[in-house]
Image 1 (cartoon, rainbow, N blue to C red):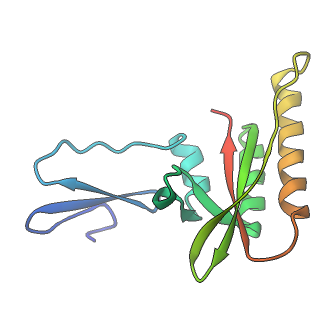
Image 2 (spheres, helix red, strand yellow):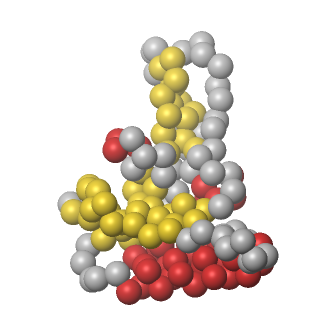
Length: 140
């Protein structure tokens, strides 16, 4: 890869966007798409891509997930919930465990963001120990 941006072979080129690689046919228009937003993707893309499972998100181990929640908190971005995955041998598998946080009718955005961050941190840090990862769903 040339400078981490794009490389050409004889028929295709590849583009890296926040550690996610996308393949484009030669001659096609180059379009980089964010999953959430550029800022949020830069936080979450430190994890494993879940794209092969049909999920447009990343799975972060417990430490990276807790760090990502703190970064989202610093940006005042609420967390709507997330999914839990088992991590084994560098691969991820769905556990079908999840959490969600909905904004209450009488709750302003600031209070909802604080509560959603707290609930996300508690869920991640209190989830039973093991080789697990978390796909975080931020409010956009």
